Length: 167
Image 1: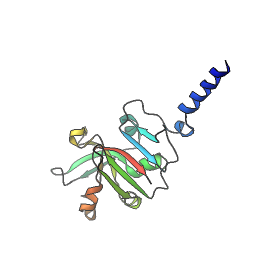
Image 2: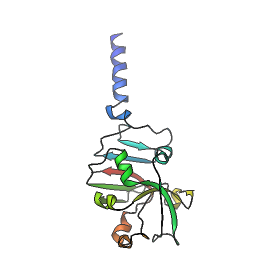
Image 3: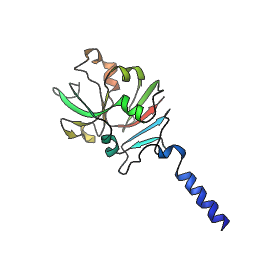
Image 4: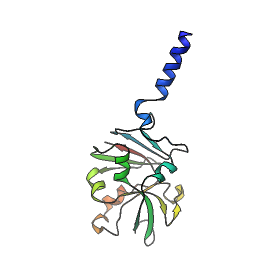
């Protein structure tokens, strides 16, 4: 009986890390993971989000042109700065954005705080699919801030985003 009790306690401790209950857990397929210097979490991997959790956060709209699209497109998503704050990443100095194909870009936090950088999941009212640079695309408001329309910033606009490492 003592062995069974010990095993039960071990299972409970391993399945419920201290930070795991601080944020809601995803119920659907995880589409985005945040790891690194976070004070909150919802899994042993850091913070995992499904589309429902991402959409439950306050959303913003940016209408902008990009080098990869024709004309202005209206994007809907969560500000990257809000997402980091929500996950307990207020002390970040930079973030590494990683795509499904492992392309990555490291972005200084000041860039994210100075501009409304969007973690977009809709383009012109439609959910973005992997074949359309989704399901998540980091969007900078290039049309509103011409100083952002540079090759360096373009390289930070990671599409098919799957992971954010907070440093």
